Length: 416
Image (cartoon, rainbow, N blue to C red):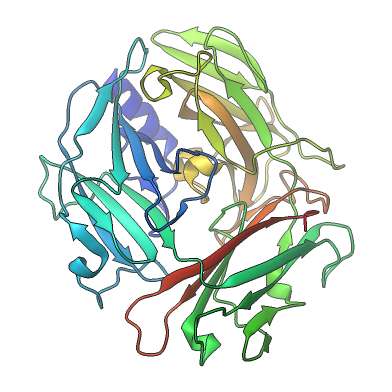
């Protein structure tokens, strides 16, 4: 079984792996469903206040125990490793310990072992606000080899106040295809002398990193704070509401599912084919998020099975570029495994992704040479779309050694 899955996944991963050092991701075909869960809420972004519970979870596709070792790294605002602080500055306890919380799947067609690592724990406590990357290594390898996964999250001390709004009255159109973000930062108790050097900001649409606006200089500043107003760089294509599907029972199709099929020895889930939209349709969604669960909604970590999910986008073939299916299971960046192939007979793009049972949001993106996913040609762009915008603010004062995450806010179009 393991060899069958590995072969299929290697065929799916046709595009080269993009450089995504700032993202939670699997680096092994055997590792699936890598999650960072804050305070038990799988829908929350990977942001926590100091001392909050953080869980890193993943599945290894076998019932064979592997001794996994984790290593915690402290990172700068741009997710490069910070070499100006010592390990003892950001970590109290021990680094490089094994993950000893694991459990085998029960009554699943795809065998897997579920691993879990939590912070804080009895061996390690994180001390500084900022970005953290946890690398996990298989113990049988030398630790200098590549990790099997990376999990990224940020710890916060809420010292600055961020106010943000989203408008469809943009610098390029009015109530048509775009949304524009405006935001301001009040320094609060933090002393900021040179905001353009000391502050680092990130604006994410639906937690996507491919079209993130990073470290844009403010255009208004005073002694109390800074503002970003009427900036063309903060105009985002509005896209459309996410598609949704739900697989709670592998013998019965749920929301968004056309057919459930059993092809020995695995379950297959065939979704309804999508087409590019010409008009906006309201459909409540979770802006790309997903929740792993099954019909009984108990012991989801080990009793949810895996299924091969078949995605279809019915449309003419593009002359250039590639089409990807994307959701937060790929952690905000189009994944090579999710690249779609064009079926000339069906006149549709299609791909197959191995996913764990649950509720999923997804969208189709067209990528050209800029590496950014575009929705205009695959989904349509409609100003009414209820997108989520996450704004992060880091501060490194003059003479400081690290970038502290000092504020964040989440705002949506149409909400105050």
